[in-house]
Image (cartoon, rainbow, N blue to C red; front, side, top):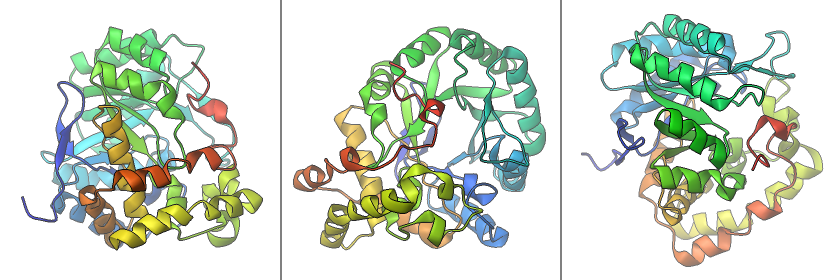
Length: 339
């Protein structure tokens, strides 16, 4: 393994071995404004060279366009790519950041996998997530339907996103769950209340999305509405605009201090924190920072070799408790407070 290649980890007890950091691909066709497609495709190729093998998408990213964008890359490297996609969030294309419908019913599970396989041009996905929980549908019913897809060879492993510890335990009793994907970062730690402990007990890997606080932890912007534009969904979220944004920008001071001590970027400190926080819980963790640029990809992957001291971890410990604003405008969209 070359010095620049990242280490590996296993997704769940019997899941695939993947690079210890994955790649969130949402922004390549959804939520973060225009994409330089040539650079994004080069970023995908470079990721494999660096040992990044878990590539994450969802059927609702770009209303299917994200899966279609990834299709040629996945097909060209099918034996190397561990492909994750998701179902369950239904939005209107003319109101992409408006209210969402959540569907977990058996018929929709099957409809969704067929659509994803068609757009991706593959006969199976390696990891299939329930993207969000519909509280009106028993999770046992949803996971039972997902398990049928495993039996049929259309899915290799099952995952859940934004579930509580109790929901994870109930699901795992129906069929082994390989991974839980939820937001987890220096800015967002509510998953530590119960989901993280349950994952550790069950041998389920944790896949933190937005480990860089949707970019805020990089220090590259301070107010999404002013710095990023109206076509960026962060401009609609509570933490990223106005007084909240100003207050949260001030919280980056200790992150910046630690970064300077290591000659590292703020992003690298934030990613190293996630890796080491997982160790406290005895948990396998594979963060999926998103990027469309090779330079950011190299920076992020190098963070897997950064080690923070106990003193530095202590300096960063209070940050999340001071963050202004919720993760989403509607936190009912998450697992927070469900247990």
